[in-house]
Amino acid sequence: METTKGSNKEERISMGAFTAMIAIVVGLIVVAVYANWQNLHRDESETMTVTRITPTPSASASPTP
Image (cartoon, rainbow, N blue to C red; front, side):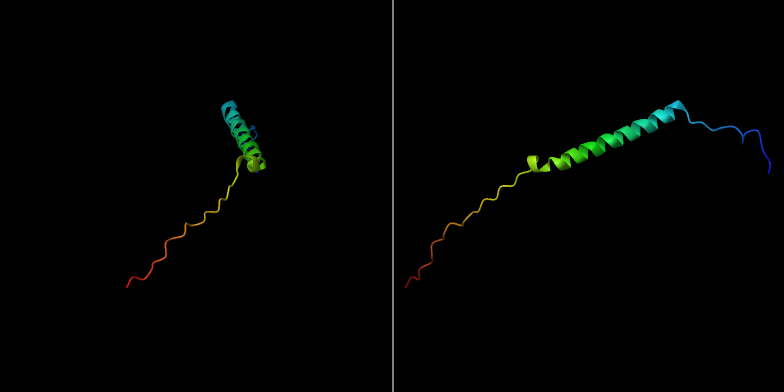
């Protein structure tokens, strides 16, 4: 097995890429927490009111001679 000078060198990511990855993970955590908070408080924010509407009686047609 051949070993080259570059194969023994450790590969590192740049600080900008590391910061971007951390920002993305933090953003996903914030979105997940917000979505769960919305889900838990759904009953407080959503209400449904059902109103029964009865149709007004229409005049019956009387036969005219």
